[in-house]
Each structure stands twice: as structure tokens, then as C-alpha cells.
Length: 414
Image: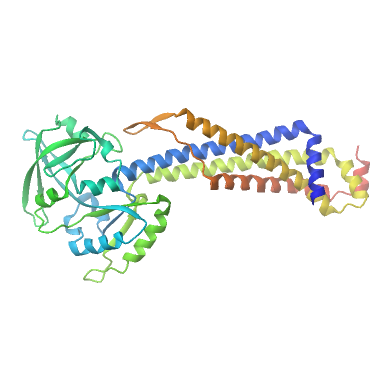
């Protein structure tokens, strides 16, 4: 086999220009795929990070049925204190969990004593919330930027602050109806203006969780959801399945499941964009396969056509058809391997240059984001294996044709 490989390399070197052009084409295909995968992967990771680290968390746990009715923010589907404590105990014992934050979500009326509108409020423990969604503090465009949210203070959504001409230090009133139907109000001081993640829209404000309990007249805490942040985001799906299985045994008084677990993919419409990026990457890889297939098949067909008499000679002196087949397959394999190695080196170098250039761009309301194109070694290995396998497949048909040639007719070829 080693001798056949040496002959295959020698044959490729006989046609240096053609070998160089074919290997260059394969290399360019590999480079473009690596660039596309790394850049889109960077954008995808940034987009997911913006969603999970500034608002959602990696996953959330609700009472069964809450998510289906979340548009109405139903208070009757909150988790009662015993259920929350049970879940808190489970999460505190899981080594995968970095932090978790209980939230009370409710709708209310927002008044400046001059104008009134509706608002969605999140009652949180500020320290736990900032551990779970660490980019939340960066969304505060006015006021304290260290995430300070004391009792009696509110972070107002930017849209409402502009339309109602609010600024830090102003006093507003929140009026809400609790689960029993009674109405209660409370004054708050504006301590921050909150930038929306997804654009200029958004009506979500933040208050301290104890203030939320006061407004809703809760004798004990009832939690709408618990946002969870993992130490390793790559374990998201595995942990979601594990936690769902662990909580499946928890039942309410009617014997129905008590909890439901959803990761960010089920909570954000931006997951569809992430899926679109994956689909685009798949089709780019298909284009690479087509380029490699056509290039190597064309070269090998030409090689067989130009060396008919040579094939006839080696067949006439007793070379078995299997070895002739192996010879041409090894030539295709060598072309693919050469293109992969060159493409990976060039691609890695170009990606390093892109990162060193610190290209900045904007995403929604986020400005000055820096492109960080990273290529996963597994992606690089996958692309390399695909190219090499396609190189072998592309050389099979010409190799079979060469191995089946009749020596006498081949020697007569002019």
C-alpha cells in the first residue's frame, strides 16, 4: 500500500498545474465554509447570550400550565411557597447550576399622576437576578449601572420613560389587582431606565420582590417562575432533560404534574433565527461537497483518459485490477487531503486576523459588539472528514473505469 501511495503522489506531481488548481479550489471551499461557520457561530452565540444573559436565563421552571397562559400573567398559577422551597432545595443540590432567581410577574397600571398606562412587572431579588442574567445591569441606560435596585425603587422600560417624560428620581404609582380581586397601589421612585433587548418596544419593568409581594398583598411568597443559569451552557439540553425527569414525579393534589421545565429555545422567538443559521450552515456544507465532488471527479476522469496506454501497460505486466483501482482512489484521497490541510491552515489564519481586527457591529439595541469568530475543533474535524470522504467517493467512478480496461485495447489507444 505504501508503494501505491508513493506512485499516486508521483502521478499527481507529474501534472503540477492541474493538481495545484484542484487543491486550491478545494482549499478555498474549505476556507469559505470555515469562515461562514465561525462567523455565523459567533453571531449565533452572541444572539443567544443577549437573550439568556440579559432577560431569560438559560432555562426556567414554572407551574404546569403557566407558560400557556403567560400573556395574561395569571397569579392563580404561581408556585406556592412549599413548591418553591422544594424546587429550591433540588436546584441547590445540582452541581450544574451556577445560580437561580425566583420571579413574581404581574401586570398593573403605571401612573405618573398625569398619565396612566399598563406595565408588566418583574419582582426579583436584585443580587440573585444579576447572577442569573448578568447582562441585565448593562441594560440600565440611566441611573445606577451596578444593578442596585432597592425596595421602593423601579426600573422603568425605556419606551415608557420617553413617552411619559420620566427621569431618574421621579415618583410613580403602581396599581395592581391581586389574586383575590382586590386592588392595591404603591409609590415607587424611578432609579433606572431599562433598555429593551429586542428593540424599542417592551413594557417590562423591575421592582424588588418584596415590593411585589406588598402590591399583591401576599402573606407568603408565590413565585411565577424560577430562572436558572448553568455553569456550562453546552449542558443545557442534557440538564433540561434531567431536571424534567427529576421533577416529573412531583404531583399536585389532583395527581397531575406540578412543574414544567423550558429552556430558552421554548421561550424566545429568536430560536427560529438560530435554527435558520443552522440550516444555512448545512446548505453551505452541501455546496462544499458539490465543489469537491465535481473538482476531483473531473481531474480523475481526465487522468484516466490521458493515461489509457499507461493503464494498459501496467495491466499487461500483471497488475491486478484491485491495485489499479486503489492507485486512482489514492490519488483522489491525496488531492482531498492536500486541499483540507491547506484550507484548514488558511482558514485558521484568516479567522485569527478577523479576531485581531476587532470588527464591531450592532445587534438590535446593542451597539459596539465585537466579532469573535471561533471555530470549534469538532466542526473543523467534521468538515475535513467530509471533504476527504467525498474525495474518495468522487475518484471511485474513474478508478473503476481504469481497473476494468482491457489491456490490449488500452495499448492500442492513440
